[in-house]
Image (cartoon, rainbow, N blue to C red; front, side, top):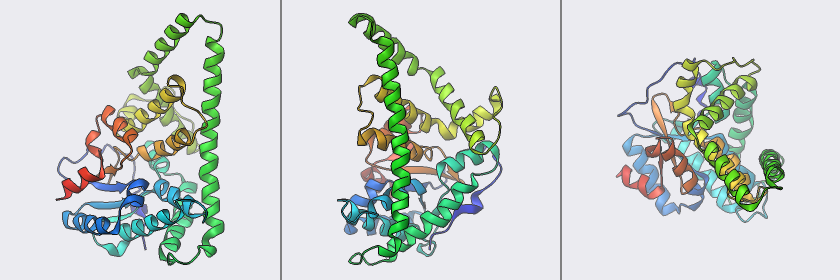
Length: 321
């Protein structure tokens, strides 16, 4: 069984990132899916030997569960295998420090307000964890019949969140098109160039971070202070800088790169942004690392000064040796 890290709830106090402590390591869904057993087993053994903390996060787990919901999904079996690996890597009897974290939205609210989002934690504890355990223990040659209704509910939840974002991206593109529709081509290019410069500014990143902080208060049912106190901003900033960069990268692609707002790639970026919140976080003194082959995470982390927190699988295996 996986340990639920409820004991990590604590008042939001400044926590320095340890310079020599062992990291807490999260693996992306693409890593769990792509690893052959001949490579996964030595990886787990090396992690145990090195003494890293091994964590799962609810968003990666939910993504895997969503694919497991549909037997016709081409990723159905790879994701079932991935769930078994995640459970094996992070269950409480695997040795060392390991377990399931709170979701990043709840952790942000905890950092900002001093208390997590109860409904999120209940969903992780009462839905995601039991489903993960069930899928991990059902033999691969047997259907997931007993868990199928709950798996489909998880898949619907993810699809709805992604659709909400896709529609907001469509509205942004429509707004931009309306603003520049009567401009001459050269003027239009200059308008978009100036807008992109503003979007890429430090001032915009500050505004994005402040929106996240206000959102954390609102998710907790509290009225956000206005303005955001500087002490609060500075305390939260180091934990959310990568998520802010990821957010800005998403809107940059939507607003200026001509990305298809309803595409699978753009929908996935919204889900990934929630995962990016972990890059910069610290759990019981373990700075969190994220192991992925997705270059968007690496770019956002590097821009936020957290480049060492995101590694490819090859680089992580090299570090473990």
